Image 1 (cartoon, rainbow, N blue to C red):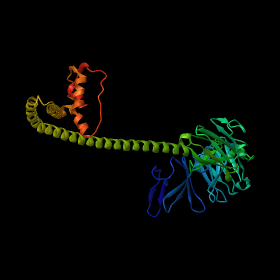
Image 2: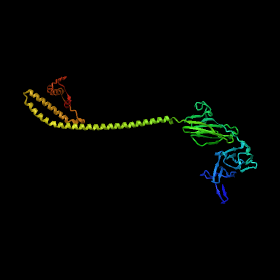
Image 3: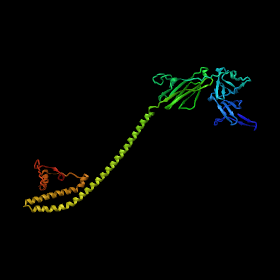
Image 4: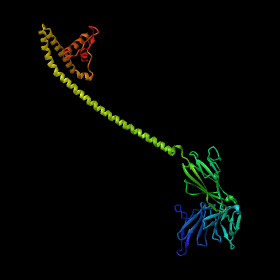
Length: 439
């Protein structure tokens, strides 16, 4: 579209711009008029446009606003200032105050639904003339009666997976008719449901228009013309409200409409108690893991302490063994020096039996002490487990008798009475005299 400025004698071109919502609607321009209020109206194959020369901006009207078809063939203003447009789907009257369209089609007596480009006129008597493929229509807008009754809107049915839900059925979703039900609850697996609705207008009911939206899922209304079913699929668990409104044959809308609350329950693994249970399980598992690591750390610490104590004990044993070994070396030489003179004394007192017995006792005790000194020298071997059993055949009764006899004088001096009663006088066997002497 071009706008000519007579003062500058220049043209300004206007065309559709996809990136600019205020540009001229797309398609070819079929009709242009200037109404009594100096507004300029342009009809294109993309809808109706109102042009503001001061700003150079366009306001669009299309099927989204109630037009039956976007291909505008002709525009005519009536005596009341209403805009009439012919389309490829009938004739529409646009009320500029309310911003609404009232549509007429072949069922209202039109020659047909399709009209010709720029084939429209207003007579001096105020009658409107529109020409189409099958002739023309002439009518007086003032004689057209409008339906002022706001149609009630009711819900007619509720379907799940395209099957109607029965009242009092096994699923117990409906206990009364859906129109009397204010709320319904669905399981998480009932992912596809449909809602039927109707406007109670019986004057040209085929012209009733509907719009719906699901609050909680969408914010905009869905204008669906005469479609009387809404379908939703795969809704997330939650609470929703279904709203539906309708208009009568003259486009008078029941804005309040009707509503239905819908609750979609979550699966059990998404319920609050499932989350609580999983949280408790996770916390329990975490506590068990923490307790395991704490117990393991305590065990490691205990093992370290035990290891340190063992090392300390081994060190003490080593010192003790070294001490006994040193002491045995210190005792061994003096004992050897004592035994030699004792042997000579025993030999020199053969005729004095009492003295000789006392000397023999001293000698036996010194020999036993010497054996014990040797045992101390071998103590380190005993600690390391390297001691070997050295067996020799002998009279074990005689060996035990000599050991018992060596404590006789000690017992007499300390007034201890003890006796040795062998089972038999002599018994020859294999034994380790050194180990038995220790015992």
